[in-house]
Image (cartoon, rainbow, N blue to C red; front, side, top):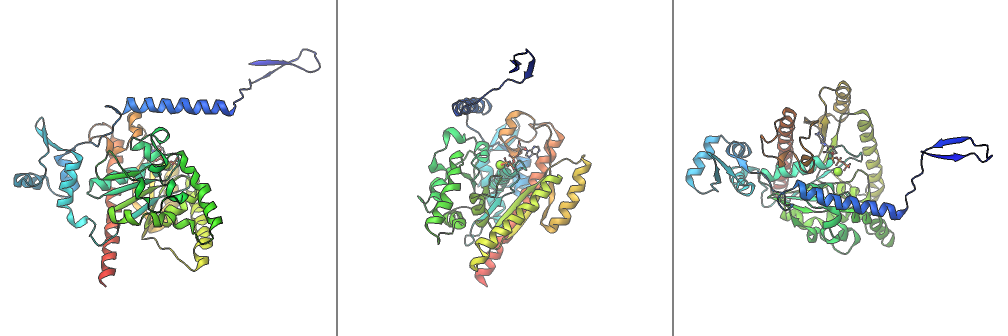
Length: 405
Ligand SMILES: Nc1ncnc2c1ncn2[C@@H]1O[C@H](COP(=O)(O)OP(=O)(O)OP(=O)(O)O)[C@@H](O)[C@H]1O
Ligand SMILES: [Mg+2]
């Protein structure tokens, strides 16, 4: 605590908190310290050698993923035409890649027909911390486990999804790994930025703070060329990916930014995670209000339109014991009616370990965490993936019908 003499010089001492001025250089140094720490934390939490790995799959899990009885797995094993897995003690398990080979074979009727285009799903809500990234990454893993080829596009300059995939946005991401070159106009097709991820069946387009540049590049291009249509930049850039992937999942920043508008315009389906809290509910109303204003200005004023195949509201981070949240849950149901997915993602109070925060429920092998809430969260995510997959499969079927009709 510092003290100061009163100007009159009468010796009255006024107590005041010390001023701790921060120059831009201080802030820069602090950023560098945290970035270095993140590097160390990641190395410590992701052994060995900082490479994440998808967990192995047990026979019971494989049967569940394939939607068959365990005996059917045992029977197919005797035919010897699918990967045999390895024996660990007296239990058989499969690497995720091999499990996907099984799933694609046994669930072939759920796979994308060759003539159908990949489905693009944007996870959005301009409120921060509502579980957008958690939902997007968990869904990507769940769909990949169900046999689909998934492209995750991280459009949040915070790079949280990128971090969950074990890539450090600050140190390991260059402009050519992100959508930045598409938004700046240097590239027309986003495929340049695709890199494989540690999870079999998922490829990744990263994000890093440099993606903030898109918020300047897009309006600048629009000013230079009034015919540009900044909101269609991503939609056009995904043409190739729609042929190469079954599902494209886009994670967005907590803002209705130029980039988020692109993500919504490119989407066939939208998922809005929404915790049942009064403020989050109120904010969601503003989101749709602002979004429809924007659509009117940008699209309908030009005589165009936009249709979504589905919009899902996902109740996230639900505390079942919380009385207030059950009231707000009723509001959500009343307001969003059939858009609300018939599943809630429970709040897992103990995220088990800090390292679990650098991954999702699917990163831990089943049984690794002895917590009831954790098991419930995993079951809820399983059901979420199932429900969203059903909608995707329906979109493909409708496409084929339209082609044939
Ligand atoms: N079901 C859950 N139970 C407990 N914690 C959760 C749950 N879902 C997400 N979280 C935690 O809440 C925080 C915010 O989640 P997440 O990063 O997915 O939200 P977000 O909407 O993507 O945030 P942002 O707006 O910053 O992008 C994270 O720390 C995450 O681990
Ligand atoms: Mg996020």
